Image (cartoon, rainbow, N blue to C red; front, side, top):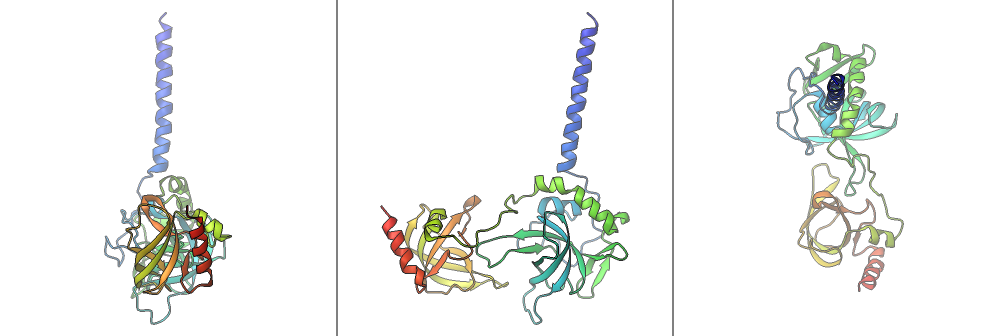
Length: 316
């Protein structure tokens, strides 16, 4: 029968074409072409970091897919206070539109960025990384100084900050058709599937627990519970947290990490003072407070004695 091998060949060829098409589609989603290169670097030296952001090739695709948890259009409401001596600070931004990941419209969010990146009253397309940590008093977003896009809604144009001192803006992309907000919005939304697949921090949508409902719940959820004595507490430049060195006086829960000597804790921690700390362990052994409130209890806190008694009674 001569027809059978031909039919088999046709079926095999069809299957190969189908698999190739599926593979090509997957590759296109996960690794889109990098055609939106920036026209030139901005004022930041290539290789520098803002709040630990990893460096990628300066294309819009790379930042949206590999780094960004949220992409919004927002209007700056406040800037860091006048006389702020540090190189970066918090900007309050009113959300006008969400392009990737949901950020409520009209919500006021805090964006940590270099001084001079944004001005009050101006509207920007922002590529942001969400930071949600129990050691910090509130959630905030990190912005990269290479991607400061000012929006003119009337003319439907987007420009990019080149010089923060002189406030010089330039066309952002080598392909000029994407310097339109409407075209750029459409393109960024087309990258959303790849953003969901490739985004490195899978916990970006996880909300930290503000406070445990009870002492029993706090003890149960904690991987480690220590009584520590702080040796030093150095507040970091943005003023929200401190790098705290300590001695572990007693371990009530958890094994194998009592040789830890430092933690990131809230900025009001004092040196040479005793605290109960309730901690959870994240991936790669990173340890942080179990909840935003109630997981760091000073010796002079009314809750301290009751917690110590409960922890001591619970030990075998």
